[in-house]
Amino acid sequence: MESFSEIKKIQKNLTDKKYSCTELTQQYLDAIAQKNGSLNAYTCVTAETALAAAKKTDEKIAAGGMLAPIEGVPMTLKANISTKGIDTDCCSKILQGYRPVYDAAVWELLQKQGAVLLGKCNMDEFAMGSSCETSCYGGAKNPHDLSKVAGGSSGGAASAVAGELAAYGIGSDTGGSIRQPASFCGIVGLKPTYGAVSRYGLIAYASSFDQIGPLTTSVEDAALLFDILSQKDARDSTSVGAQHLAVPALQQSLKGRKIGIAAEYFTGLREEVQAALDKAGKVCEKLGAQLVPMSIPEIQYALPVYYILACAEASSNLSRYDGIRYGMKAEHYTGVNDMIERTRSAGFGSEVKHRILLGTYVLSAGYYDAYYKKAQLLRRKIRRAFVAAFEQCDVLLAPTVPMTAFPLGFTGKDAVETYQTDICTVPVNIAGLPAVSVPCGTDASGMPVGMQLIGNTGREDLVLNAAYQYEMATRAES
Ligand code: GLN
Image (cartoon, rainbow, N blue to C red; front, side, top):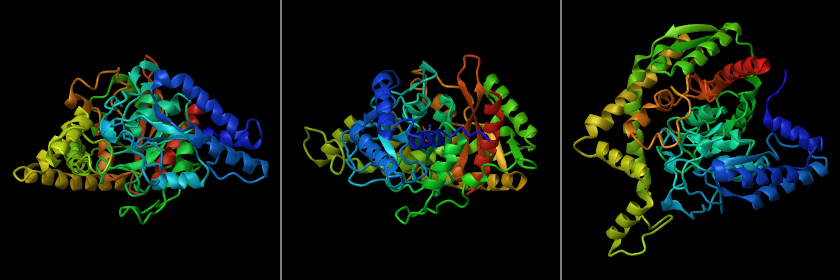
């Protein structure tokens, strides 16, 4: 079967000596210099680090050594993944100039394999947003149409990968931040099961939802990266690692596989999104899967539950930015409280402040029971509803986003309207489940539509297998 893996293609070209890793890396760096002005995907380019890693790969090839699975492949990391000595500012003024003194677990794993880091990518400030536009650097743009957003919060990584400024990217997904920009930019984005990938070194937004995962141009690459990244890590107390390897499952047939279609995911979709999803469902049927109509009414609570709990956790996580321990500090102040107030007022953008206030409110003495506690109870209910759904099917098929990429500036207008666009992505973060977004067609103006495949806890293998079979069937046609 033909492979669409960009990672494998690059590695084959490297070992066939079509180009050296240094040449390839330089090509990427040149492309970034040329195109980043319009895409705004990178906020920090690490040419030296990249060329040093490339040189190592070239030396290994020259010595006749075997390449590790992702060795020598140029890639990018979201700006909230810690890299020792390299800017990790979460695209927030409050962390500008911050260079961690240690590497995130995922970056350790990738470095061990010989990854070539081209730079850090743009994102919504502290990963709060759906368009990348809350970044203190302004948003990343969509390579398919520069008047549209790349999505968020991992918009920079999605824009870089879709714009051919990196072979793959590593992002984070708290409520859709890998899948939604992947969907908007026409690439693959995997949010693993909560706990599958270590969060050590990921700058926290909402710790009980945050997960790291890959943004790639093919399902095979997403599976390859998942298998590398999903290692148990004692430094993250919620880490369990992978329960099933993804790559060995890709080739399995979908015959007899049950794909659940939960009605609640299919309300309020743009017509073209609905049409693309219907078509995708038919492809799955052709591949031998059985579509199982079902209902998960609890999904209706997902948005308020997510925004209450994520904001509550954010208000606690972001209390550490006080001008003393990290990043910026107000220049003029009269005492310690004044210094903290001035630093936080000047350092955080308005969306982050909004969420800190909302989170503080729902945790405050008089409102804790009414909001936070109730949301926790509903979270459990939603999780149980998914567990029950997976008694009737192997994976669920749903849209990733009810629409295609927004025009620039859309999300700044109405916070609630923007939050509502996360309706299809947040349920799995609430329930801790794995989900992948795969391209499944375009709208009338050629903007990509994404299909989401959702699995039970630890079943990345089933999710990626279905996505791979779908991708093989549809890409072969085009
Ligand atoms: N768009 C969602 C939010 O604004 C999700 C963000 C994320 O996954 N980091 O919170």
